[in-house]
Amino acid sequence: MRINKYLAHCGVASRRKSEALILDGRISVNGDIIRELSFTISDGDKVRLDDSLISIPQNFEYYILHKPKGYICTSSDELGRKNITQLIRTNHRIYPVGRLDKDTTGLILLTDDGDLANKMLHPKFQIERKYYAYTKEKLSESDISKIKKGIFLSRKERAQADIKHIDYVKGKHKWRVILKEGKNREIRRIFLRFDLKVYNLHRYAFGGLTLKGIDKSKSKKITKKEIQKKLKIS
Image (cartoon, rainbow, N blue to C red; front, side, top):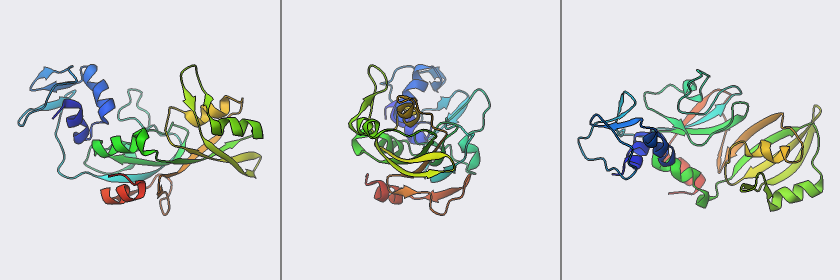
């Protein structure tokens, strides 16, 4: 099994992020640092991430978490900030599927099933990420039309979103925003493109998965079959 696939199966990270760990020299096999992405893991090999021995778990775990503000979504952090993995009690090495930035709240999935995590993030499945965004100013109909058609956030980075104004609450405009890909801070950057600051951002759904019955900072354990059915992936 290729080393990046093995690491994904171990729940270390997605295949893409596993490749970064390999190139950074953090993975060793039988005591030797491995930096070749084509390296193949054989039965009996002892694989370590830094100083920790890792192996493929017999049973994977899957969680929906209602992320509160102030928590980060990385598998490790040198600054010692609060991590969403601290909110779930498990002996498995789970990690988030994608990211929400520190100040964004709402639904995020965590698992140690690297293959399924990779599928959930793959653009070909076009899984909808649904958010509520709050701004003090209002986008014009022309701006909304441009966002729906697609705008450039930088010279090479294009973004597109289905956006709709749905309410005005306590001095802020409430928007429903639907994305089919999850670029870094994409919604905040879309609004900033039109000089609007997003004061609150909340993801309320990922495909057919929702936060129903899950209080803030709490999680719900689900099955692989539930995820596959709700997200229509196999």
